[in-house]
Image (cartoon, protein in one colour):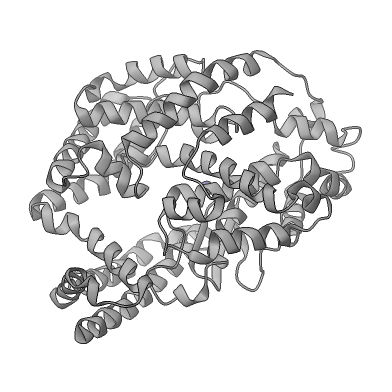
Length: 496
Ligand SMILES: [Zn+2]
């Protein structure tokens, strides 16, 4: 075993280094690189990607993983066992799917995002249809190749993105949302509250918005020695270790709240990874354990902390100080109501906290139908529009603002969407548990977010990906996933 461990560790060290350079390159590309550098950079990147592929698919490395996996009982270190299990799972596709099918699919998805983007631009679903049909066909075969006694069909795709969560869990979750949330949302969104034109039509200079985002970094104690804030077209978090996890935001002069909540959301992601135990930095266990848990942290910071009245009682004066003219006469209570308004809307990424999960539910139903074969790809636009009307109460007029709006399917990512809704529901359950141990609103009013960071570090962050989502939820909240907290949280918040 010793030799296999040594081989594994030597490869891991190399792969981590290559990932680091690739990561730096993509960070540079998203934030700083001049436009004309694309081609030159891509040439250099290709050389490195080829080297990386050689290392990651080296027979002695794969053999080491295989051997270690089949002798797990001889490994003492629990974290190392977990790492080997992850590595072995990651190799399933390469082992079980015929090479030519796998390569054909990789080639297909590498072109698909361009085809999708063009189809979306031109509002032409027919142009994307043949590509999407091939992607779905591959996914249907993929689940057949990978099926086990425990996991079959769509469950395999779901488990790929959120370990341990299958149709059984998601069906129960979405059933609850359909029963309890859909009628409630219809009721809340039927109201049309009015807000000051200062908020809806104002112009907020970029320079001042940057100052406020910088201010937020210190409020949330996002460690400037381990992270930083830049600007990009779409906000994101990107990190490699507990000493380097960076975020971006985007400033719109006609919308002061967009950059604020993007910055807070991304800080939620970044603080998670910065607070991982540093012992994981040199392993593959560094990082968040799953998409759903990652999103639970960003959404808790954004929605539960960042959109609360307790938070704004302390920080609204600073915002007014930066925008004295722009916010003159707008009270903190009105600002608070404004940032928590709910509307029936068409676009998922712009949806508010209350309606968001219903957008996701539409995608879940459709994906399930696609994989079981109950829904044909060509019927997607019609089905999409019908479900949007049923759940959110709006009917898209074009496919651009309907079935073509998201990039995920063009990347072959089926099974990904449900984790977004799960993240919000986890957040409510975790927030509830946290409130049993610390008075969160009081800490916000004392401007002491450090106390909140410390709680999530101890209960979630420090474990990195050494625990599964289900295990983490048990540690943090003392009970299994329970979507009731989410429904209760939303009803309590939006009833007012
Ligand atoms: Zn996020």
